[in-house]
Figure (cartoon, rainbow over the protein chains, first blue to last red):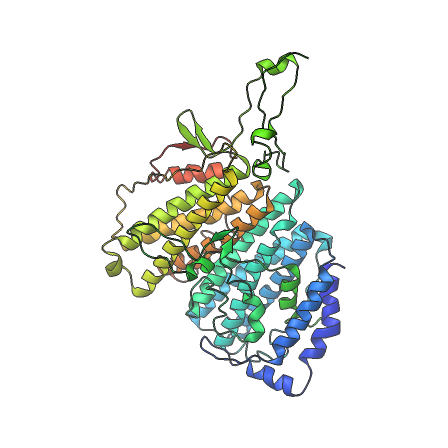
Length: 276
Length: 250
């Protein structure tokens, strides 16, 4: 089963049904719309739903042999998502001048990424999914409240960085290397985006531990695993700078390395915003 | 069969780029039991030993080496440079007066991260080269003639140059790494360097400069330059005093 069919099946069986269910779950979801850098949010059934889908996603994609083409298809879906997200925000015209300058620059890049990946994939390029950036009402004011918008934007960018990173192993052959380089060149641009958005939200440009920066539990998956400190047997949390130099705090260890997510994990996050 | 001299030819695997990868075989190929007897033909007596392309001194200068070991050593050299630069930045007597407290926090974080990156590569190379005959790159000597660490703009512009160069270096080196674990580790670092670059650029010039048109091209791509090109650029900064070569890197 390829990634796009998988996304389709996920949308058909799970996403639409869950996100549109009335009742207490929906009410709780609407509370998630109140987001900000200091918002405290309790764990809600939404994250349970998410983890169920994540488990299904992991199981379903476990048997998929991932090639460079698969990697580019996943990348294109994520770029479609970001491209439409930023384009829509600019069209809705609710951002101030400073915010608009940031978003216009990012939007320009995402549009270029879509064009590049579509061109690279040719006939194999998946069609653009239908997106719901409110995630079924979880973020009802995503395109009217800048705080909500930037919180969701941060999740997209940090996810994008991790998703591209997770595909690094899918370009093993000599013929894949040009595509690997392109993927790396996009990946670092997404990291520039992520850093700017995080800093705009008064966070550090880099990820400390698995700190979600005020995101609700629904965004757990975006930052899960970012708190690792061992890198190839090296403990990044206890580095001595040397005599006479400043002490390096333990948290700098997890900040100094970003962590990948798998295809399944990236797909599960994206599918929260895909309805068809 | 003639009694030939044992010609030690290290066991190599040719990766997809044709590069020799010694690190996968370390401990197996180049340890005492892994010697290959080259063969019995007359040709072998006259064939000079092929360079093993491991990092180490050749003709009095340290060569970064080839294959994955060369790329890791190259990355280690760049991280040494960044770590040394930021060490001088944050320890400069004017640091707290030329930078706002927010800017100081950013620069101290960059110092923290680059020192960690440097120590990581030192440890990784120490482990990977153990028993191979390769040498871990020593601490390079850096000089900053004319670079005023007490000047805010100079520091930020130099930091921007180093971070953007680091991003391009990692992006351009990825295709030459055979070992997917090393590629993954490089991938984990390059995005942090890009986060750094974004922050420094934003502090310097605000607006769209975090990912400005001067660094991200019309296709939305960051740079990806080959090791030889990056080394040329870094050399032109005239900061690295220790001479070195990189004859086996592309």
